[in-house]
Length: 321
Image (cartoon, rainbow, N blue to C red; front, side, top):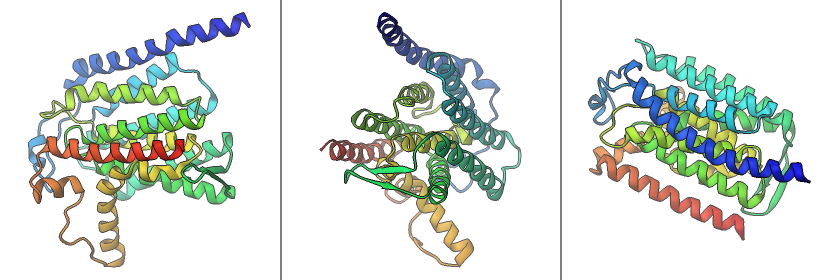
């Protein structure tokens, strides 16, 4: 009994320390190491893409490694959690290598690597967790055959990584949306009593992104690149899986899905099916609202964030009924 009380008191002191460490480490490391990052060449087809030319790119390597360090130092470690952390780091490294490459990696190469990470995530999750999911908004549980569930997890992870990556194009946008999404997942965990071994990691990851956003708010000093956006997408997918309610990914990450996903659908249909859709819509959507509707970068970030917050409030209220 005494050991339990001491352990709880120690955790109550250790957790806030870990959160402060994660933020300070990210801010300090970014300030000191950003000069060593590769420089962006500007994106020819993105709205105002040339304005990013010359800025340090690939800052995801800094905040993801700061997160991993904080997690290993302050969070309880279990084999499952260790594997997830390693996969997030691997996803970050593949993105950073692309950021640092003089010739951008091809879509098929990146897609294959994402598929490998997604498969390993599915294997790990099903090794340590049930194949029963909860439809939290309807208070219904469904057991899915493991093979089918594994395929669905692969799809979830691959989609999350790529839509989050495609949403990275406006200073602070993807980072802000990711924070809203994972903090919504944190609240879902608290309401449903799930993901206890992962909830603290959500807080650590959120404050590391905040440390990056300290330098990325318009006008930004640096960019996260694929190193950050791909790791964020993977983390979101793992976090939603740990709630036991993976279907909630749709409303919780709806803005990311629409912003980055419509472009993926549009390009895929044109390339593989010769079907043309959304001919008058620029994708990602953040380019459309800036180029066609005349929104500023700040308006884009705030309005996209507001929409996602409203959806988050609806989700939290719905599962709490």
